[in-house]
Amino acid sequence: QMQLVEDGGGLVQPGGSLRLSCAASITTYRLSVMGWYRQAPGNQRELVAAAATDGNTKYADSVKGRFVISRDKSKNLVSLEMNNLKLEDTAVYYCNAGAYDLELTGPAWGQGTQVTVSS
Image (cartoon, helix red, strand yellow):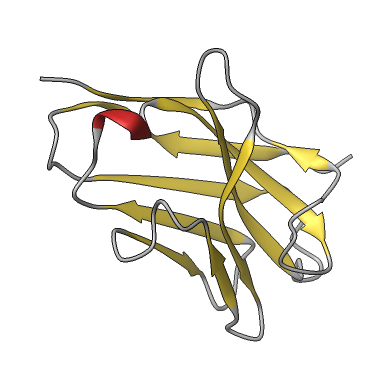
């Protein structure tokens, strides 16, 4: 069973930046699509960003222009650079993998990493 290990997250002031990374335990082949969801208290889990091996990406409207998703070319690693963070970005962020399109409905999930934006 594939495992996803997340790193990054933490506490940052509004306007600050954070970087999340996620590595998959699968090394024998490249995963087509990897990405990130987030879930704030009382809210449903929402797709933040997804990236495919062909270079295509997808972003939630709320993060366009602020977040950048990237894939490592040789490893099953995905990163999310989060800039100009806002209070409403506070959530638990989950890595997702195993999907074949940018809807990011893969079966594998990371354990989640907390991102808190607060002054």
